[in-house]
Amino acid sequence: MTLSAARLAELDAFLIALNHASAGAILPLFRADHGLENKLAGGFDPVTEADKGGERAIRELIAQRYPDHGVIGEEYGEDRPDAEFVWVLDPVDGTRAFIAGLPLWTTLIGLRHQGRPVLGSIGQPYIGELYIGGAQTGSRLISRGGETPLRVRACPKLTDAIITTTDPVILTAPELGAWTQVRAAAKLARLGLDAYGYAMVAAGTMDLALDTGLKVWDAEAPIAVIEGAGGVVTHWDGTEANSDSGKFAFAGDRACLDEALVALKRAARD
Figure 1 (tube, rainbow, N blue to C red):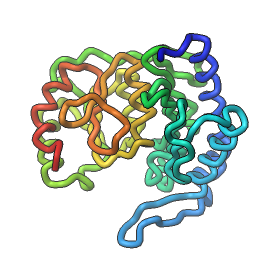
Figure 2: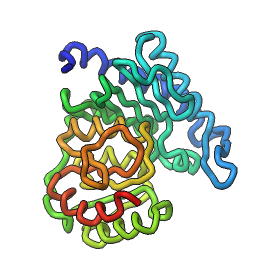
Figure 3: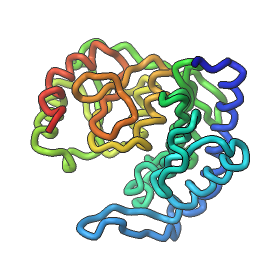
Figure 4: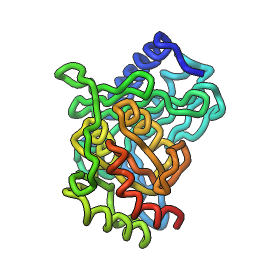
């Protein structure tokens, strides 16, 4: 069912309010005592009080305003994940950047209606940027300078593309082989951006973001924002992006993505 313009406007305004609420919990802990913990016994998977407090603030506001909506969050799990409307939350995407004091972490909030992303936001409150929208509404940047429509840029050739991945070190051997091939063809690559790189695809300053091992809370919001800016998101095998975990390609230009998929498909199922 297509949502009405009035309903989307109401939910969009609430999405902005959720970002304000999470920022209020997160920003006081940025470049401060953030209460770092390690979730992984055999490695390093950081979580901070900012992650937890940001998600609590979002969940509390949803429960007050829309008690019948479901929630899926990285820190506190699922609550009615089969509801008609489900909010998908990653309060601090890029926790490693957060604990390093780098303003490249983001707050990801997606809204799913009947199983499909309809609205999403990628927020970086420290620098005052909120990338927000969806396929039905279009996407825009809300910043201290006002509001600006978001539009991906034309880049039909991979050789002209600026691309990103979070960290090649975490890729498997087949994934690294695919990334290396795509990077060799591209004009420029930047690393370590996490979801901020997805925002740059929507903003038309980058052309392709490739990541693996993503969870639903990593991908849901960026899918909506990029689609609303005229871009496309697929899995590495070229199939339409959904909320499954796995390998995602976030692209501004379908032609550029198709060139990259030649390499990506070889590593899609490892």
